Image (cartoon, rainbow, N blue to C red):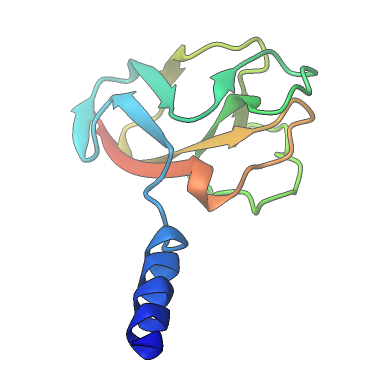
Length: 130
């Protein structure tokens, strides 16, 4: 009986700590979508509140769009350069212009100090710009 109870408890805990799906996503565009040279992106986050950079309240943060780059590891500051676009004003939409071809777009959520919340708060799609 104790073995069965211990096994059931183990399974429950293993399920609770299993990798959760990403908590951020692109509302638009969709993965593998063909887009024009300039197009709109829209972001969403679950389980957090979008706030301006500098707001260090727990449970808040803001979006970063990484163009043709990789997600930023948890705890590292998201760089500010041509690849990493910051939306520290709390924006959830933006206009993006890219050259024709295939591109990856990675959405990365970070705290008020621009520290990445890691892979659980990132999502990558690809688009074809025509």
